[in-house]
Image (tube, rainbow, N blue to C red; front, side, top):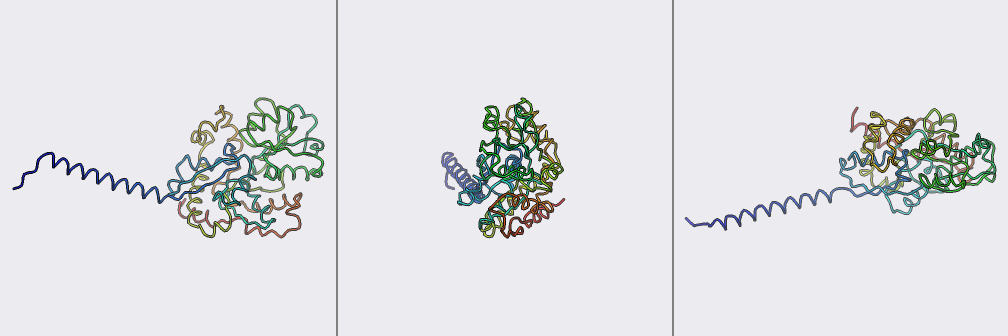
Length: 348
């Protein structure tokens, strides 16, 4: 019988273990390689209106679908839209109204998952000018803050003014972003009124810098301000990408619909616990309060609200020369196929 030294036996054992590590590493590498890498740009990740994007990542739902999703930030939806059209990203978390505005320009994008049924936006007025600006009719002669020119805050501000009987030349718009830049513009009197979201709203009110003029954080208040439901925050992609990447779109829809269900079934405090701490801007209680007041804006299932697209088209057509006189096919601006499939997959 041949004699094997313990050193030879140990060497063979080491080779077996090493081989196991190589196989395991290969499996891990293959698993990592199988994850789809997708880049989604968000028109202001710190805004509560776009909370579903970050919450989906934090809950691990992208990974559950085998997706490797990178979320990148920009300060306004119009910038995100441009990145999508340039092919730099696969999708955008931004306002649905861009789908109509772009179709009027001959470009086609489509909302796949509808996050909200109200804008979640508030028209604020500087406390210093609250006696002068008591309604949108008083915008005349003043400078109004928006996140960016051509953004959804731009669209909504123009509509509030038009509904009050004003013309575009009656007031000025200044792009000031959101958060600290918006607050600074208000404090420095660069703007006398402006449209923004939580958590900026709460900070302005708490510090006494500004007051609420027009509130569009709930469906009911939105109907009062805009004349109907206004689907806003959504996940949209180029129609051509959707046609060729239906599997990826379905996985994203599955993840996002799970998040919408999570939001619907959890309190503002429970949702805030899942968010990165820097999103709370140093005041967790204020963040929770703002989320509680605006939580009704979110859809419970990712579906487009009935009559929502028609309201958005009406709003844009009231002032936008891009949209006026154009034939808009609303059926090409959104789809419910992927959220319907997600509902079947997820069950009740």
